Every structure is written in C-alpha cells, then in structure tokens.
Length: 72
Image (cartoon, rainbow, N blue to C red; front, side, top):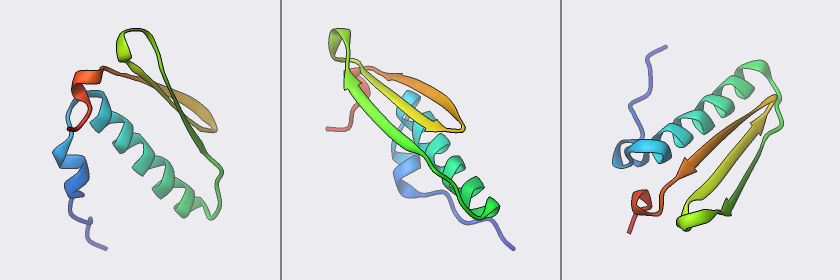
C-alpha cells in the first residue's frame, strides 16, 4: 500500500502545532492498526497566552504552543 500524501493542514503549520498534529495523526493511525483505542485531547491557556495541549493515549504528550504560532 502506498503512503498517503501529507495533509495540507500539517504542511501549513510549523513548530509545536505541527508536532502536535503529527502526534495526533500517529495516535489515530496506530489505534486503527490495533483495532481500537481511546484518547483525549485537552488544552488550556497558560502564562503569556501559551497553550498547554495534552494528548493522552496510553501515555501523555504535552505541547506548549506560543500564541504567535497560532494561525490567524
């Protein structure tokens, strides 16, 4: 099976947002391969307008996204 092309959403982002989106994609694809999975995604605004994004799927992955990285 051929690899699917990179999503335009992923290519449009850089930095921590791109890493977080890649991790979400990995969690979903791995879960589909396994046959079932459970995950959660939470976000809160911290100091200086930074977003603390946490992806929980077996283990937790935390990303700190500066406000200037957010799409306009």
